[in-house]
Amino acid sequence: MALWIIIAVVVLLVVIYISIYNKIIKMKNRFEASFAQIDAHLKQRYDLIPNLVEIVKGYAKHEKETLTAVIQARNTALNATNQSEKEAADKSLAGALKSVFALAESYPDLKANEGFVKLQTQLTQIEDQILQARKYYNAVIREFNNLVEVFPSSIVASMMHEAKRPYLEVEEVERKRVDIKF
Image (tube, rainbow, N blue to C red; front, side, top):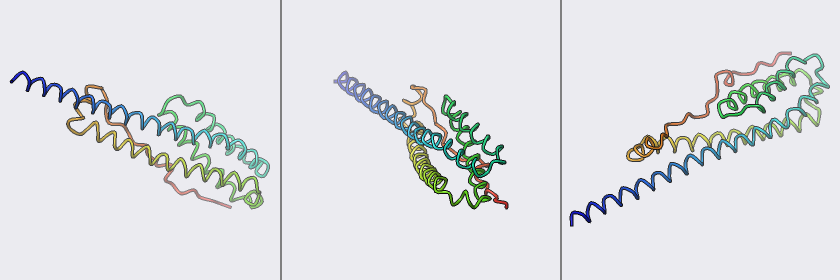
């Protein structure tokens, strides 16, 4: 009788372990997929930037420094190989794009240009999609972090060498207001 109880407890522990293990793997796959979604939106943004720069160049020929910074930031973002590099490059690019849109305020003809307005609208839509994807990513990370920190799943997570993951955060530079000067 005692042997059956021991066998039942062992089987129950194995089932619990497998269940938690599978849940951790599913959560890990979700946050990797959600980051890939962010990456796809960023790629879409990177593809629009050269068009935006070309239109702005036509109106703001002497603003070469700003436009060069945008292209350099875009190229750095395209060449990023891992998640932390992509995050850093994206933050740099977001700051450079703010400069372009602030620059556009100085050129009323540029603001009225249909191509510029269309690209600005597309970039705004993509930025909204990136924001939503980042919110989803952070929600998945929250669930994952809860899973790896709460008992008994924390035991399985430590056996799998899984630890709490960082959230995507906005850097202080991105929080600053863009000043437009005429």
